[in-house]
Length: 144
Image (cartoon, rainbow, N blue to C red; front, side, top):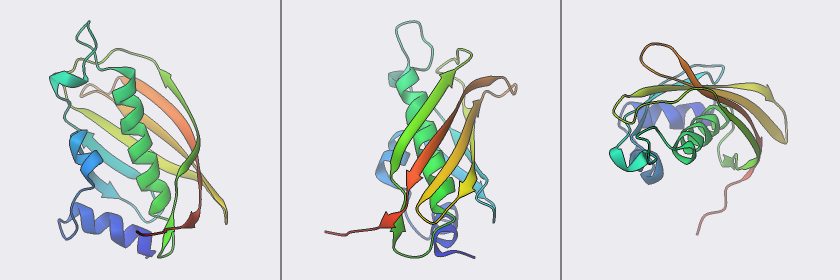
C-alpha cells in the first residue's frame, strides 16, 4: 500500500483530521481503493447555492478538484504532492442545494511526473450532475 493511500485511509478512519477546506465543503471521503478509485459524499449548505437555489458551479468544481486530488495522491510515495496543472469540467444537470451528492474520482494514468484523473458528481437518484478530468504534477511536498 502506498503512503499516499495510507494517508487518505487515515483521514477516513479519523486517525488524521479532514483537511480544513475539504471540511468546509461538507465533503467526506468514504472509500479509497488500492487503484485510487475514490468515493466521497458531500452535504451542501445553502451558502453553496446560486440565486436559483441550485448548487453553484464553483462549488461543484471545488468538489471535483478535491476528489481528483485525493485519488491522485493515493497513488504516491511519501513526501509527494499532486497539485493540479489542468482541469476541465462539464455541468450537465442542476442539483438542489438541499440534497447530498456523491463525488467519485479515479486515476486514469499514473506516470512518474503527472497523474490524470476523471471525476463525476451524481445526485441521490444517480443523475449525472457534472464530470471532468484533471492533470496533476507530482512534486516533493515542501513544508514551512
